[in-house]
Length: 100
Image: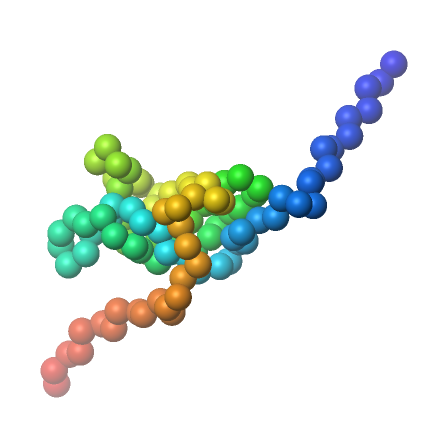
């Protein structure tokens, strides 16, 4: 006899706060102007489910115990206090101009 597996239904009352592709700010350890700081840093949500969100950053980020995250992806809880929707657009750093 085969057992039929039914996927659990998602509770409609539980909604995702963040979705893939959104810009968010995360309160984390990172480098700013050559110094390590703990402040808000903008990143992009690359994966999200009901409970967790994966955010990828352009800059190096660190775990609270000091280790650098090699792939620059931090995981946060959807309902966490250290993540918020981004209020500003990402500014690209311009390449230094060459003199002719």
